[in-house]
Image 1 (cartoon, rainbow over the protein chains, first blue to last red):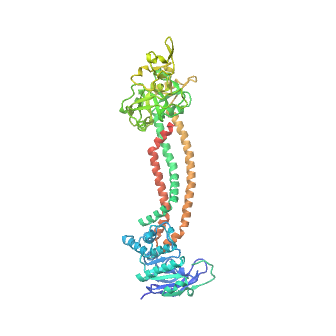
Image 2: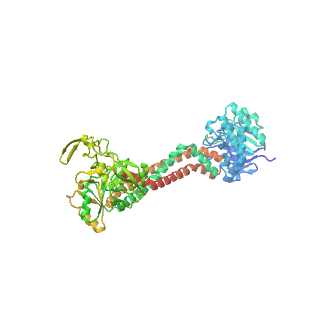
Image 3: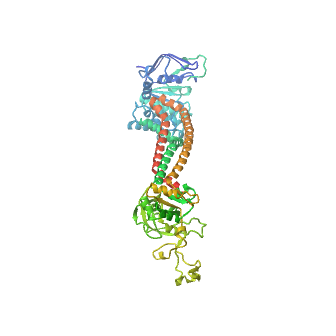
Length: 230
Length: 393
């Protein structure tokens, strides 16, 4: 079976600072759950950005879902991302001026390649129901608890039914109860829909839940680090 | 695009006070100079049109502007009073038709214009309901005055006292409405027209009271000296003119001394006009003759100068406000940097992200311009009413 993510001879560095990331080879298998661990600033988030085509490497290939993202134009990478990749952020990144429902539906409002219809709205309602925020769809994010916000963010990430879910420290801002709850939701979704889940974390407590754990320190090369970077 | 507009709309609605403030500022920036221009244009047209249609005005020496504003627009400040003899002087000269004007009193804020039937012909005023003036104590209402007073033929209108402290002066006169004029889109619409003698009745120069020769008035008679009868205050004075008491109304003194605010002179041609103006050039003459259009042009010159200063001020304030608004937009864009990044990360198209960000500027500018256009339209529609109201005060 083809891996869902395949990286070859990747070299990346930021314009400023001495941070360098080098990945000779990396493959992430389909329908698996993988955690990347490593200290802060080691390039975990940068890797997610490279996989999603948010950032481009200086050299090497990144193939995600059979698409060589490094060869796509900016516009193609945006279309690819919105349809095929779900992103969950540590800071949730919900828009304060949109209601929870509008936040969940956001991908369908900011890219014309997706069509917002009744079926999508129904799916948004079902997802909200499944994560227990159905009664808070009219509220603004500012009126939600941290856990509820991350659950809404997860709904936004999976609404397009992506085959790859990238989570950047998804539990980093959550209390223990909400941490496990959000993890349950992510794993449950990945299992139920055969979605590949890739998360970066430095939370050792949650590593047992993942099928594969990759220590990130093997990939990054430190020059004289200036603190700038991922 | 519909979806992007929705997101933009949600942003503006969420930050509604900021949006309202910015829209208000942009509206004012756009509206002030344009609205002022429209208002000045309209007032120029209006002032000139009525002045153009009024050949000559004769009044007591004093402010020509006050004379013109009072006679043409029935302003509340009446000029120094002239006498009825000035109207007789025009008739005697054979150089024009005099129309006496006595615009001094008011009824519930509306000017009472004492004149003659010639005025209606001169201004082309038509009676829409009822009939024209025929008897002392009657009045005809301008269309807007009738609407504002809620009165029509058969109703009554009571004149107001000039001052609450004027106990011995002007008493209210109850006047019978006999007609309502057609809408003329001029100051005449707001006026209450009476015969000039009725205006003198309001002032008390012409009055009617109980017949002192009748037995029921005997108690009020203090003494008789030949034709002269001295009576006390118990004699009933009429504050309404009816067919029954009309006979008792009489003039005291010489008619030629009776007051007027102006005499509107209508010469038959330019030559007569020039000759008539020549008759009032003497320094000893107590009266002045003015050409309303010349007086209004002087006023318009002043208004245009003031307008230029106001517009210059508005432009400077506008530029400062625009700079502030631009700063607000820029700060807002900086504050939304993270939001922009999120939209980019999750795959928002370049156009959609730019549109969401630009929406604040576009919607605020468009709404401000639209509101300013609406206000300008309202100004052009109702500006003339405002100008007339200003001229009346």
